[in-house]
Length: 327
Image 1: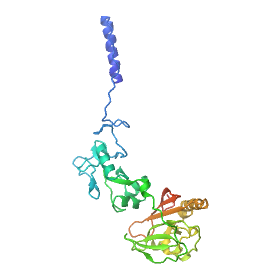
Image 2: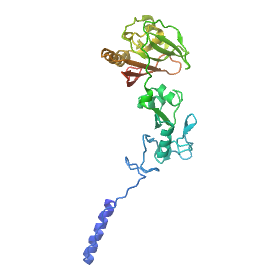
Image 3: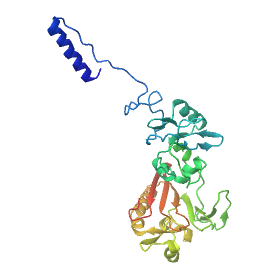
Image 4: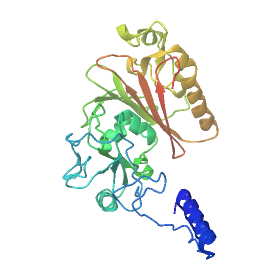
């Protein structure tokens, strides 16, 4: 019983006592449990217990009546529809957004045992969802069989791979003395160059799209010419000719290992990360790096750099903006 009603009830009982001399007992406040309320915020839902499992609710505005629900995200022959709880499962609509009900979560876990579901919120992009889940956009796109530049719709459900499924497979130590100069055969859309034990994926516009390998303790000579030419006409006056993998780690002198890098970022946040790797090496650790630049349009200057590294197998991730702030 709300406080106001309880107070009026007591006033009524006292009035009866004054008129008749009889005492009327006032009952205790009645408490009821409603399983259809979210215990976190008290809002009404259409599923017992409010939110369920690992799937977070999409905190969107009330859906517009008559609006077509988002199309489902597909994995092979499976789909999870967003908006209105479409056929095939997915996100069930409430008056306050989208939820995954228990059956949908169970179906997802059964079909994707190494994944967890994440419901897309308004404004989400492949990059923002990836960063929030400590992934690169390329890893998220690969897990969902989508493009890195795919447009997301509120209510879509993305599959997030578990940390164990992301770890790189053990590989023999690279032979840093072997003069590997040929193109590596690959099924992906990029051509590959291997230099000094590092694998570089390069697109048709001669832009480096991914660099990975175990950091070397050797030091390479720099190419001042390639440093000065990095970024071409897209280079900004405030840029340096930076390395994806520094010469201190035997990063190659080739042009594809260079990019137009904001000078503050180059001499600040990125250098601090390289110092962290060097300290780990001095401690005898094995450091494996995976660097993915992000571009806009046909620009040869990346606007962001996503770096994943493994220090003795322990995964770390940082996303940097190629700007004065550097992160």
